[in-house]
Picture 1: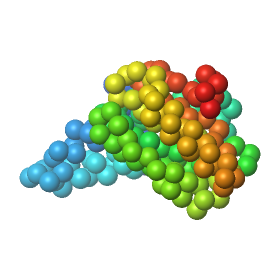
Picture 2 (picture 1 turned 60 degrees about the vertical axis):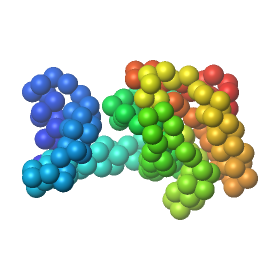
Picture 3 (picture 1 turned 180 degrees about the vertical axis):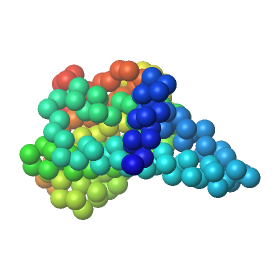
Length: 185
């Protein structure tokens, strides 16, 4: 039985989202990984990591038509993050998902992003386009000046190397901001 099945059974029994369970368990166990409970903790942690890998694998080949599709596919992952994380979703030339990669993980309200780290996985996987996705742990999806600046910079870099930026989503709680929907990209 796959990792995902265990959490689906758990989710059905307690009536909640399995991604939220996994994220919460992993976060809680992080502090116990080097304790006297380390063997048991690591086993549960590995189970949760397996679920996350299964979830990412299930997104491969998926086609996203709009920002809402991306939000619906990824909001569960980002909703429980306490630190800002910046990810890219790689797409082939038919806009099917190749992979999602974390580019950086920041402090509570800031993530440092460099074009080199954003485009290296896209070049390696021969992606035709990418979507930028990051979270605001504050719960407010409104872009900061830094968000606008990095989006503009990454768009310019993408144009130089022939990799389109389809959108940039900021996910915060149950809300999101799409640079395309708001005509800011």
